[in-house]
Image (cartoon, rainbow over all chains, first blue to last red):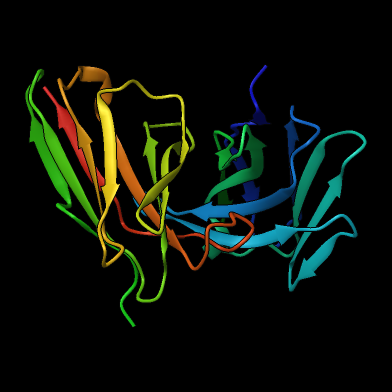
Length: 112
Length: 114
């Protein structure tokens, strides 16, 4: 089983719609969770951290369910500029090494 | 302020050759991590360096090595290149070692092995 699993998509969504991405992780000891955004042929950039209580940043809402080892990202009122690949990222601590583990990414295209 | 910089931007090498990739972190950042991103996949962790010492290593063969210099810049070296080493190599810097802190990625070096 992969450490971090995401639906690779692609998701093709009309402008203004709401879209949700899901991600599962295998290591129950994982400590921190993030969503990164990566535009085509660019570097990943942090979109938001994910907290147990859930957190919201404008049109974006992230949720964490530790019991189910599940992370989600909701984008409301989607814009053309939201087209990108969304990477689910988990911080794992193994044998004293901390490392970020990335999912394969979910590709989103917003259609005018 | 300048972000994370990497050089070169693109590189073409032949199987069996050696390559050195370079990274300069954001000023004041002491932690540098290296990632390999193959097309269609997420970045895979290779190394983390903090205060010039290796603090983390991913599941990569010994052909991959790295170091961090006193000015916190870093080099990633790959020996005996294989076709499968073709990828985007990303460097990320953060203020401290703790990966809870945001990691800022450079634009990457795109390596093609022929």
